[in-house]
Length: 157
Image (cartoon, rainbow, N blue to C red):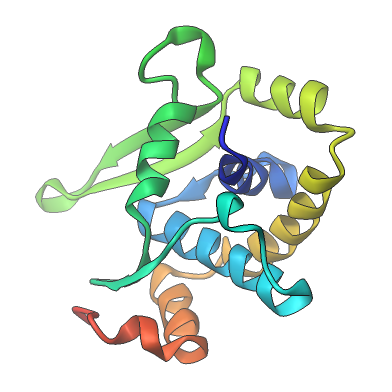
């Protein structure tokens, strides 16, 4: 497991394992979690973070999707730590929801409970999830754009 995968795992575990609604929201929350580390103590080691670029709806990292595929156990049933659920709405639009599987919860509680680095990530993930998981997606994007305008330069909004 890559150390950066601790970021989405911590976000999904935070706030009583409340699901994260939407791919765009997950991208923004991971981005904000990393920014919280930069503001608090200079950031994460380069191997522990995602590189974000300005894209259609703000900060975007393609490797985050690859890591989610790995956490979802695309290659093996035994490695399913995360589940991606989808709902189809009007005009075929799909909304995704991310949450831990029981195996993911067990992994965190058995393997990461004593990991000081994970606990620090989790502490900050609690703050981000509490602040942003209940906002509308447009409010999340607006906050990201106002705080990090350089990531709005390629926006379709």
